[in-house]
Length: 152
Image 1 (spheres, rainbow, N blue to C red):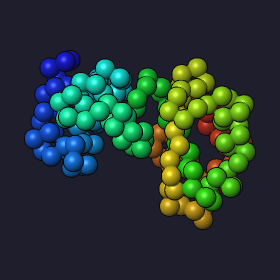
Image 2: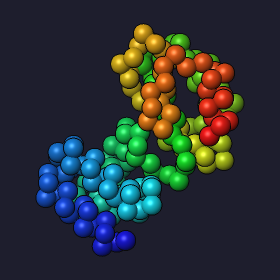
Image 3: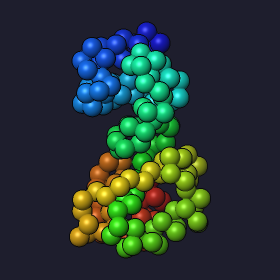
């Protein structure tokens, strides 16, 4: 796999990555697929070395893109931190962080879910908003979230 990641990163470097965001995202997606569905720390280190960026930069980019996974979690829960969503979704945040012990960027519920937070998702009228495995779900309620987490 080492040659494969280096080949992938080199190809996209020649396409303009990391300064060309489209090329960088394509690189990370292809690398994730080559790594079996996640971009672990070793993969980030290797890709970063070829692209000339720190692994923490790649990690920050990947955290913002819902289909990129930094862990082996089966599902990703991304919670909007915009003004309306934070106000309307206080019970959701409280439940995730206080009751379930979820921390941004970390897995929870036995490693089945990874919890992420992002800025405004531009769906303010339907707050609170979350993304479940990349799919935007508007008007989220605590009861509905509990059902989703239980099914996952």
